[in-house]
Amino acid sequence: MSTFLFAVVSGILFGVFFSLMAIGLNFAFGVMKIVNLAHGDFVMLGAFGAYYALSTFGINPFATMIMEIVVFLVVGVGLYYGIIPRLLRSDDPEMLSLILFFGISQVIEALATLAFGTNPVTLPTNALGQLSFQLFGQAFESSWVISFLVSVVAIGLLYVYLYKTKMGIATRAIMANRDEAAASGIDVNRISAIAFGIALVLAAIAGTLTPFMLGGIYPSVGVNLTITSFSIIVIGSLGNPIGTVVGGLVYGLSLLLMQTYLSSWANMVPYVLLILILLIKPSGLLGKGARNA
Amino acid sequence: MTGTDQQAQVKNTVSLLDVSGVKTGYDDLQILWDLSINVQRGERVIVLGANGAGKTTLLKTLVGLLPVWEGAIHLNGEPVQTLRIDKRISRGISYLSEVGVVAGLTIEENLRIGGYHLASGAARSQMAVMYDSFPDLKVRRRETASSLSGGQRKMLAVAKALMSRPRLVIMDEPSAGLSPLFVTEVISMVNRFHDDGISFLIAEQNVKFLEIADRVYVLDAGRMIFTGTVEELHRNDALERAYFGVYG
Ligand SMILES: Nc1ncnc2c1ncn2[C@@H]1O[C@H](COP(=O)(O)OP(=O)(O)OP(=O)(O)O)[C@@H](O)[C@H]1O
Ligand SMILES: [Mg+2]
Image (cartoon, rainbow over all chains, first blue to last red; front, side, top):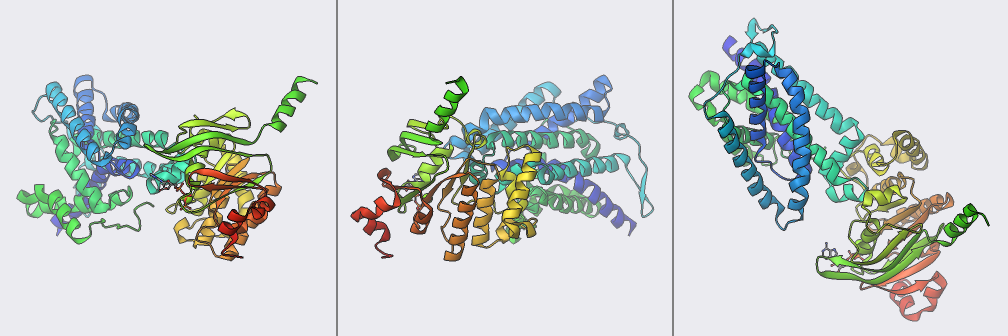
């Protein structure tokens, strides 16, 4: 029984972290209707940032996180203006964007391999801080709990931005109806660029936590993280950032329960969940009704 | 005459909106041919046109959602044809599209979007003005626009378009899909805000709007085939038959 409870609580801790990892992908999709196939590579870069900052310069992961927030925001906005308006003007933006972001993913992975090699690197799990947390008589790793808390705060801030600020409401207007948003006088490109920047910032925050949650980091892990993120957002429902939390929890719980009881099958979890959801409820657990809300 | 007097003089003779020789279309397909219209301060101008005549295309061009191929658009004497839509809106144009609202947002959020370029204090006070004029919207302000009926949605669209404190409101078929009761309500709202000094350019097929027209244009296959007052329109046999025949 205690094994089960441990798996459930860990599943929730990991689930919320996975939600954070995936939410930027869904947010960018909601705004631009483009799947950023390089999303996991940005998470991977965020993770290597945390690794090098700590192992080479002794910089605390939280300080790295703040630096990465600035850098990824600038990169995201720049990348948006560099490619997206051009993409949207093309005849087949969906297809072209898949190819383009797949290319960006490959380039990032290749450059990361040159820079960091292919061997996984790890960080001591206590580097994120100490925090004792007990539930049902079980102690949980402090890095898990801290990552969980950081994820809750980051997702909460995204929610506040989207629902309580004028720019966030404008962002949701674009997600709901790009043409009507433009007709209302919203500068669609500027707001979308900021949204893409925020999407990468969320990837970076998840990235700095990744070494503490998922262990060894290596350049080609980016692809796996993209697939995991993609499964989570499809489970939660595509285009609805808040639905991603549901997707993340479903994924986290399934993964941890599998690792506990059928560990050799655990790697298949994202694929199995993805196929199941596409067969049973293709619009995601939060379905159409909540899609643009 | 002092300099400011002269400026005032110029301001009074310059049209609020002046469109001359505009050509535009989609990709290579030309839709509007050498189109010229103007709106004077305080006027309610109706553009009549059948389905596919090019009304929406014209309005989109005026607000900046479609580029001008040739010709000029002046707002208050200033050229605006190269400005983005958000810049035109902050200069006093506002646009009620065929859709009019963002269905997925709440009523209050729609109004905030309408007043997007206003400072937050100005937006708040303008929202209070809108809630005074549209009390139903105030009651339901936390509900999503998709929960409103077609008529209520149109009233929200009108309020949203007025949120930006415009000098000129450009409306694309505000009567489309509305019951006669709601058409009357939209017309009375136009009059109410016209009394406050706002000018209107309204594309319509519904001749009921001619009741409030100071001037009428008739658009046909991308060309203006008539401009004048409502009486002059009635005196034109062909147009009289085309637009009033079914009713008369
Ligand atoms: N996005 C588009 N791409 C190509 N052609 C278009 C596009 N939108 C409209 N058209 C064409 O332009 C012409 C004018 O269309 P427009 O929508 O301006 O007419 P309208 O007067 O607004 O009609 P309605 O009363 O039906 O709204 C039509 O022939 C239409 O087929
Ligand atoms: Mg139209």
